[in-house]
Image (cartoon, rainbow, N blue to C red):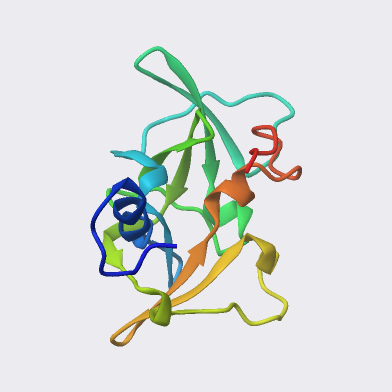
Length: 166
């Protein structure tokens, strides 16, 4: 693995960029996902509901000719009532070549964390399995719950995409 400060070569640049997380809120908690998985951020728009889809799959949107499934993370993580206002956004993700969107309360910023700022997730009864967590990121007084969005979106319970090959 490349030295954290070494910027020579593609591998080192990828390692450095891999420590950037898009910070967003769900309820009172702040979460982070790998910025490299984010394609774009859009305002929430009405979706077309799909019959027999799980409750957390709000439906689909047509994004420049691509049909994109939209997952409401508040419903998925059982975080309060899902309300839609001017701050509600959809983060469009590219996971293993598949485009999908997640609805979050708001997006704040992009945060760079080094390995010393990321702690292992505690083993406790959380809204979702810790297997979908990278860890807890700390920056000054902030704490981000870092989600392994690849694992979460490719999990069998989501049913959105096949398991991503490592």
